[in-house]
Length: 327
Image (cartoon, rainbow, N blue to C red; front, side, top):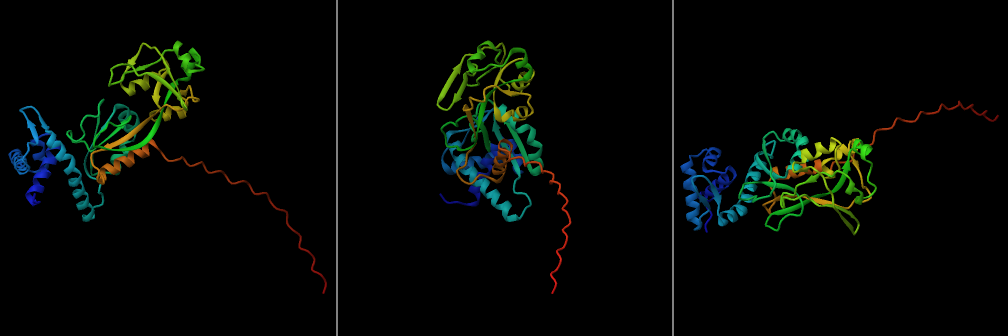
């Protein structure tokens, strides 16, 4: 198939439709009419001989062939944009719109407090941070990147592991003063344990404890079943229960003593966090910038030790000059 300017133009229209979610939004972004966008897609479909979209009056979805084509051409379109930006000598290569797919825990407890810093760093970038229970289809839904806990599904996505976070069991000092501190995981049977809903099964997560190769599963009970991570943290800080939470999201509360790690001798239950993106080529500048931002949030650099005051110098006694020998 011969590569020409019209083919490249039609491919860029395809990318705009996927990112915008409709022909009308693509038309606005590209400065075209909706009918002009429709004609470009029709020409592209005729050129390659397959239907790219399933269209109804209420929905627009990529076909399997359209999803495959977009997954392959989108990195190239982004690469062209990066190359043009770099060649133009523009002051900021990180620009445009960045769509991020994540879970509520990452969005609320990890990223939200730091987002003002990120948007201040890149004034030409528009960020869409979408929190949802399931990963979904990044390509079909026009996401640039996902940041998710847990092992990634088997797919064509690039998966970059960012870190492992401990899963720890915590309570407030006030709760422990009223109810006593459990000496071992099995003691949790007599405590009020906050249950968290697993979005996949709809059931509460199982409480596990890991130490080296040893693993315990401890039955727990509690009258609260929650799903929102912000509500989980707020409820735990209210001092009415014990909870299991990923340590990376509550480090400030651990450092301040608001929450106590009950079983530091069971340190090995861990959950990985991954960045997932569609391209196996070099990711776009905005994607690389976001990964660097997430890394700075979840793996902060060491805090420099406060400078110590110099030790006072003891005054020295004056030394009497030695008498010169007589010549």
